[in-house]
Image (tube, rainbow, N blue to C red; front, top):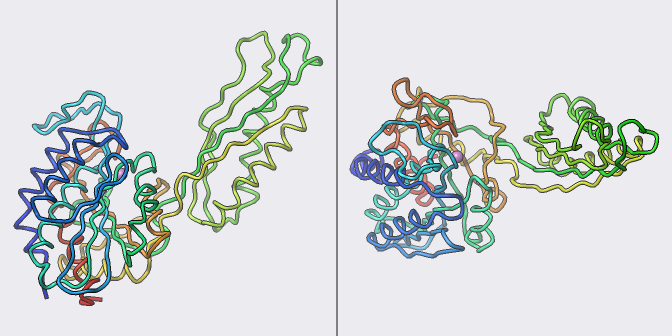
Length: 390
Ligand code: NI
């Protein structure tokens, strides 16, 4: 049995150096050109087969010595539109862009995994696919890789996210829904504008919009089981031009999130009924534009147990933590629709330098957990392909 805890130590310094290099050079979603080039360059040095999709998706392929199953390991590569406020030697060199979610850590760790798995490929059955995906923050990268057919031969997939809300050393790997589905909606309300002093000659879009916002609140309270959770948020309301004009049209924008795929399927129908009925009550009209951005990220119970078992073996039972499922979303969910998957939250917070939340200008991680990411990815691939472990 190969233990990847030690092998991960051998690449630790290199992984930290890669992470800092990526951190200094953050790139916009779907335009991670430099990052993809660097990744490809490193994979090429290792002698891996490489495939590219779109502009910036990089797939590394490691063929074992014997035929067998295929496992995919995923890292995302994109940064966020934020100006970094950390005073560190590896701070972002691009104003207005920052790795504020830890995707730099994922990319670096997965390169380390490729390096150590490559060392043992002569003993490895099957195939490991390394997904370096673009555009997680815009939910386009995973879809690109799925649409390119890269999941078609995959039997299992693991994704890791460094997690600032969890102390370094703690790992959450739990079965079932772990991150919410995320939908985006836009409602166009059409009335008839006119003079503020003559409402009887108008159809007031402000009143219809206000009533629509209020009536949408009843979805969670009246149409969803109290045992299920759902978020319906209208985040933007654009209606009217000035104080003495009755608005003829209005636009509402919002999001729907939850953990139940059936609710995601039903949501557009419910919303359409409420907005059309509400608009009609005020003699207005409403049209719905609805986009399903990501499905629910659901951890496969068996793979979850496999990953938890690895954490137990390598770092002890006390490293396993339990955290609630997250109302944020992950495009990792698209992979889980194609094959069983598991998504792990790797605690990376500490009180010294990593105490700010994700997407914050002072976000940083405890780099001491990078080797744990490497070891978990690698051991998972090994155990899955060799049938060792649980
Ligand atoms: Ni993220």
